[in-house]
Image (cartoon, rainbow, N blue to C red; front, side, top):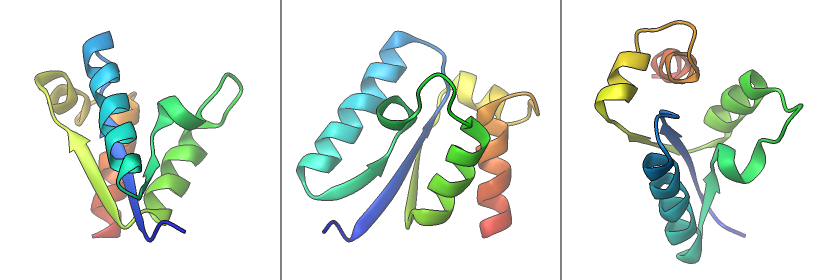
Length: 92
């Protein structure tokens, strides 16, 4: 059983960033780290808000892939990045 749980947060801004997030997830998984990444677990019909909340609550660490788009979405309440960063702040 993997003892370290990591949630990867990123902005849905480009295929390049999505591919990097997936690569990072595969890399960490290869070394025994349990990953929470939407691309691996969220499908049409999934409750994204619940996924984010539960994923963050069950993870020991959060890795944020911060780009200019990510920073912009941190202050936009209509985005998942905003939701995730607000939840992270409440957990601190």
